[in-house]
Length: 434
Image 1 (tube, rainbow, N blue to C red):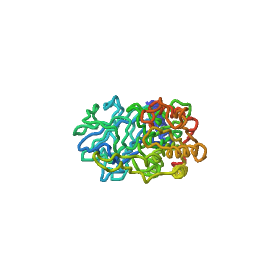
Image 2 (cartoon, rainbow, N blue to C red):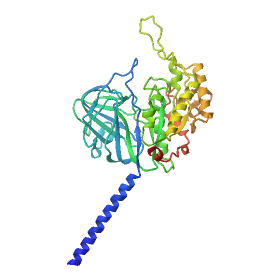
Image 3 (cartoon, rainbow, N blue to C red):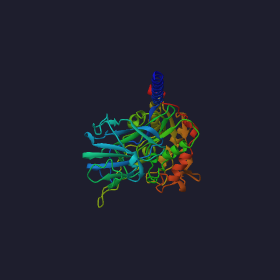
Image 4 (cartoon, rainbow, N blue to C red):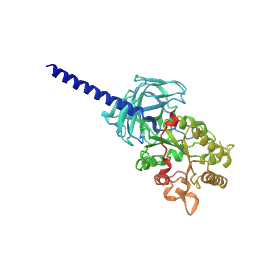
């Protein structure tokens, strides 16, 4: 009888030791990982110009937004921003789930999102808040629904205007846990949402695409993820590199390097949109075409008026030298944070009503410096990838979306396909995390 008890105790001790070893091993494996930005967007204040969409106003309603991170994982967290809010943002409840189709989620994937263990949170004006880690298994390129119930009256003061998927807004009520959210309205923007992070292995990192509408994906197919950063992410996922790399899109349509416009300038938003993002070890910058073209924008005078057309940016003309100085600031500040910087040449824009010979000269001078100046860690020649070989100042017809400045999905694919993937042996973020 005693021997039987001893044998039972021995087996029990062995089982406990095995469980403890497995727990320690799992904790050790997790301790070797780190957070990386897996999906992110550049938040902005609502646009204030003729023809801009009306400001979103919600009260006692639910909003469901769809995003598509590049890397799957088993632990996520969400970044919510109220940076442009004039008062605190009250989130009554938040949920994260895998999308089945449209505004419908896979019910068994639904997770309550908490903040310090609480299901609701108040985000101060001007602040960003991280959710608690969410233990949830996802696959690469899974569409995720982030659903917020907003009990009070709120305005969409912190947004990203050009979303890549429909956003669904309910009738009054809390439908954050609903499998099928029946929308009362739809928009094409994201609200109060800055990013989704994933806990990833040591070799995983994020590559940030920093730019204007050509990076944002203007004129690409809604829900098709045809913008060049998404198409680059797909190529990286199919490559042979051992390190896993997420590509985050930090483009803002209408953005400029040296002046505010649609969103604050690239120099003003660099810290928030790039340097503060977890796990970013590489940065591609494709920006300056709006700095060149905006001074020639003309807003028509009211009908019946004798006033001339108005040019709100006429006093903001820039030179190639000034743009070089601005881009050098991006390079130096990124290098201070251990981030490699890849310079992308500006694509053609002849055919746009802001095009002229002076602007084309600046574009060519800047592209020559990007290619040969040695300031960047490497160069991505997007200009060569999409220009018409018989008319170098125009985009190839098959790559033109029709507005002569934004590529079609095929044009964005040509840009992504022109990138040498071996450039992105980015390693880990260990140096940045010290």
